[in-house]
Image (cartoon, rainbow, N blue to C red; front, side, top):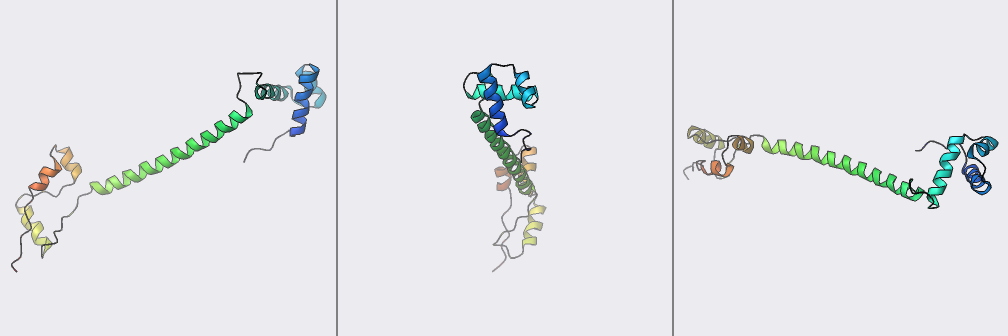
Length: 150
């Protein structure tokens, strides 16, 4: 919530109108109305920009649009940070070592024992990438599930 304004809008409009119509110096008008001269100078400059007489300042409408766009950018950056954190979290979940459970095996521990004895690897894809090996190649080297006698 913005801070309350020190001077009412009617006083601002009256002071700007008086400076522009009478041609009196800003400092004199400000002293007569009990306004700080730099505050009145800023109001006059803004009124000139809104009227199209000045190109060095944004108009009030342009300034409001700029404020809204900055808020939107800040909101999108916060959302982007949340999405980055979530993707990092889920990427860490995917990189954890997994145990392979074959549905056709009657005893999964038997499969793990037999395949580990044959040198099969259950490392994560991250370790496979670090060692320079292709994950799909490693997957083909796994031994099949030992079939239980039926």
